[in-house]
Amino acid sequence: MNSPAAPTDTPARKEATNSSPRVVVVRTGIANTASVLAALARCRATAELSSDAAQIAESSHVVLPGVGSFGPAMEELNRLGLVDVLRARINAQRPTLCVCLGLQLLCESSEESSSVRGLGVIHASITRFRSGRVPQLGWNRVEAPDRAVLVASDHFYFANSYKLDTAPPGWTASTTEYEGRFVSAIERGCVLACQFHPELSGDAGLSLIARWLHCSENALGSATGREAPNARALLSKGH
Amino acid sequence: MLATRVIPCLDVRDGRVVKGVQFQSLRDAGDPAERAALYESQGADELVILDVSATTEARLNSAKTTRAVRRVLSIPLTVGGGIRSIEDAARVLDAGADKVSVNTAAVLDPTLITAIAQRFGAQCAVLALDAASVPGAGGAWEVVTRSGRERTGRDVIAWAIEAAERGAGEILLTSWDRDGTGGGYDLELIGRISGAVSVPIIASGGAATTAHLIEALKAGASAVLAASIFHDGKYTVAQVKHELALAGVRVRPQTSETAQPL
Image (cartoon, one colour):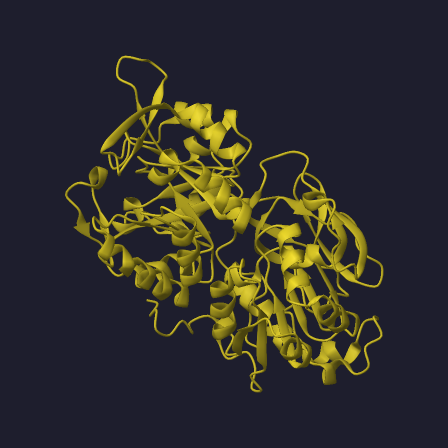
């Protein structure tokens, strides 16, 4: 029987890391940050909310949580002066986890808010599902290619009406089937962007977050955008 | 391909899980966080908490319940009951909910749905639609509010369409005629609503067997919600999903393919 006070009965919930990295969760005021913080706590990471640009630039690990819509979220990142800081982290492949809308914000634009410019680190535009029940709500299978270091094929929880259609060059993309195939996660160095919600994806999600927490700039060495063999030795994704 | 969701529902009153026929004669069914952890370990795909407390003071405790459940829960959590404003919604989300469900307040002021969807996204805005058949009018249902105490005379189909247009990301559809009876979901109602809107429908009210769940999915529901069949220990979530799988329904495996010690 589970005891709520000690949810350590499954392997994924065992201590994720000895070094317990400090994580900054970007406070945008519109995300489900409580769930993100709870998941990080279960992975034994020390996490805090912040919208301070310097802290977000310096922190070893940063989570950009995402619910809400494209336009207001970009407006908030612009208002908080976080656009350049986030771009710099992502271009340097430093440990940054972008969740759901967070993945979409990496792109140049979205059908959701056509006049708004995204972070633009990926040269792509986000589109809406054209058929089926929208939003996609529920668990769907993510298929990760062998070269993916962080994402492993498993079921994860989705809540999205918009999606990225094609794998961006230089990134390792995992895909999922919903009214056609779309890009459900991309990774490059220690940057991981997921269309699904790892913080709501049970043990599979906690395992993924734990692998990302393990990812450090030292482990990856000087990131080149290519596969990092020494990271594979450090990060086991359970194949 | 998306898996079908099986969603246990916790009706919570004064910090305890309760169960009962049409919210009358409530019986104690345990601690919400313990129940939540148990159902997640059995393979629940999401959890819904509906606060059925009678008073506003008791509802302040509901944030406490949400926080306690969030600490142990790694799957999505919808919280509803007594959410009257965007501020109420924000409080519930801050406490650890991922979605908020609105019923009575949205009927009184439909712009509440618009406000929640605009600020937090459509996937966060759940319309709890309680329906009761109109006596003497075959195939017509009206919206009921205030935990079934008030019949509004409002047509459920029109209301579902309006709510979806206003940004509700899914509809938690409860048959007030069937809730707590164990007589099966109202399949005609599910069919009509799921045909009228393109957002997912969660079927609720009346399930006693796995066959009932399968019927609801065939009628057009995207997900099935049940309370007493799980609280009574009649089925575990795992047993239900196993039977659904045998019937050809695609469900998420109970165990992750990849989670392992690191």
